[in-house]
Length: 95
Image 1 (tube, helix red, strand yellow):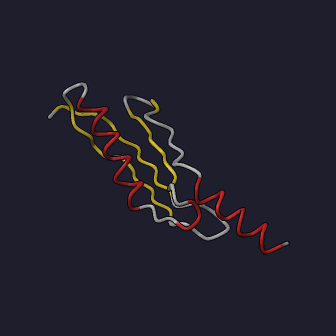
Image 2 (cartoon, rainbow, N blue to C red):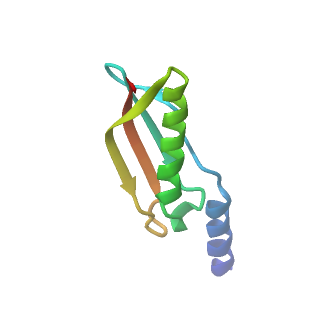
């Protein structure tokens, strides 16, 4: 019974989709995006990092600007502790 619970809990975590904040305005023209891996506690943050850069680039492109990274933080997944994730602080600058 205990093994079934662990397996089902693990599957539920793995199946959970990517949690993303979207572009969030911060301070003085800066923005933040954070996202967790869709693979949950077994996923790597590499794809998540690419996803948030794509989202940031699309956001800045809509105003004919490009992304300037202020800070990027990437956390690897630790099984049964936390999911893989990435967080980007950026601003949009003229090309």
